[in-house]
Amino acid sequence: MAVVIVALALGILAIWFHPFDDSWVVLVWGLAAAVALVTANGYRTRRDPALLLLAAGTAALGLWYLLYTVTAQVRAARATDLPVDNWLRVIGSYGPSFGLLAFVACLVMTVPWRDRRGRPPLRVPTVVLSVAIPSLVAGVIVIVSHSSPTNAQFRVEAGVLAAIALVSGARAITRGGWHRWVGGASFAIMLAAAGLWVLTQEGASLRTTETAVLWFLFMPAVAVVAVLLGVLLSQRSEAVRLRRASDRAAQVMEGRAEIASIVAHDVRGPAGTIRSVAGSLRTSYGRLSDNERLEFVGMIEQESLRLLRVAEQMSLGLKTDAGTLPFTLVARDIEGPILQGVHDAEAGSREIRLDVDPSIRARVDERWLAEGVRQGLENAMKFSPPDTPIDVRGRAEGATAVVEVEDQGPGIPEDMREAVFQKFCRWRPNGYEDRPGSGLGLFVVRSIALEHDGDALVAEGAHGGTILQIRLPLEGAV
Image 1 (cartoon, rainbow, N blue to C red):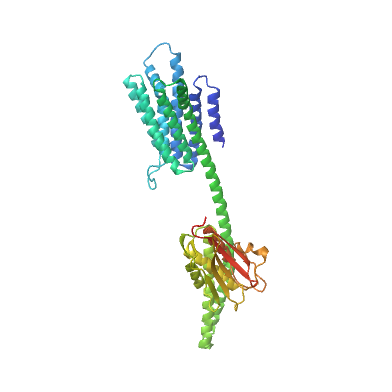
Image 2 (image 1 turned 30 degrees about the vertical axis):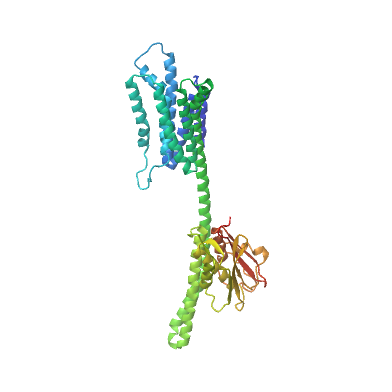
């Protein structure tokens, strides 16, 4: 921030204390010096090649305009001609054009012309030389020619300047973001070129000439200010993005620490049971009958499956919390994912009653919608009597596709219907306090629904149980 204040102060001081009449020229080189400082400092901290190019371009623009101002005063104060006056004449005649060409050449390169991944990064000497050498060569050519500039030459300069600015503006605008400010600066240079071209036309009215002079002198200042605003806004946006990413990373790490704690708690139960049963089987193997041995093996298998489900649930919870689940939304009917979710839930002898409209279509990821149905169905089976059926429905409600899982359990109080969607919610209805679970099931369900631009909620069932609703926009719905 201090560098920004210093840079702006330089531009203001350059205008406030200048002893010359060409105030717009002084404004341009003062602002250009300010922007060169800002962009150079930004490149030093961010190593963004675009900032390096902007620093070189604005520095070249400011230098040429400064030389133009100085040479104009020197030439006005000289009483006799000397050989050095040829240099002064060139700078005084072509200085602003050289500066604008160097500036707009750097603007056109801020958007890379090719993918630079795997290629050497742009280096400061390379960029500085690429800006300085063309200007010096052009200056030498003009000096050696010993000819005064003509209107035709200025028109050529204006055309070249406008063409490069048009290319730069078109490429920058299409990129969006802070590049739009670079596009705005390019179009301001186009107006300056138009002003230069009008000034070379004979027979133009006084009003037209005054407008052309204003464009040629004022628009470079507008271009420099546009670059400054773009850089400052991009730095602010980058700072906000980094702060949000840092906050998100802190939340994810905090969530992972909590998940690790839950894993340690939930794994300890089945792991302890497996160890105990395996130890008993090993020490008593010779005294056990075949049926008893099968019973022990069955217990080990059951606890192993429970342990595997805990690991899978925690892994899914981690990915959901970090937002790294890959979603590919495709327009299709929702009947298939619902049936897949019911199949994956392994309901066993539990009665599952299906009522799904096969004509309902939505943009869904089949895999993750099926996972959401499975999570909801397993949650319903866990917190409802084993001899009661579970209803799974798919229907349309206005512009929304609604997937419902209804149980006949004790239900969820109204004040807990949002809390159950939070991570690691350990609330249990009366009579089900001992049911195991990570508290991630409904959190995963809502996360999947949100990725589909939908939502998940719970409501009271017709028989006092719970209805879990996964609500998704129908295909074509806005």
